[in-house]
Length: 129
Image (cartoon, rainbow, N blue to C red; front, side, top):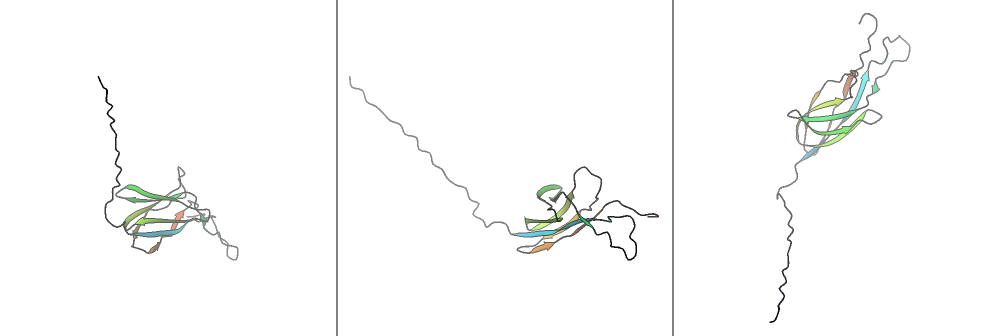
């Protein structure tokens, strides 16, 4: 009786998927997040109390979902590249009630840089405010 060996090979075919389309157009959103007032009373002739940079992050929302976020640097600046469209810009400062930053609407335009500066409220009030 003769014995024969049969070898079975397994071939793995790896394919890549492609949508075949071009990448979505993008634009840049940049800006400065600062908070003021920084002192309750400003005296004539004395140095003014300049706004201060805000620490935290900037979130971009579309249909109430966060689609991107970026950290605010030590100078209060941020920059992010997003797909063209309309977003709500939200400054996230964590659990602290202040500074209070109002959400802003921003439209990202193809291949352009849009600047959005956010002025936040520190909650400091002077006499009679």
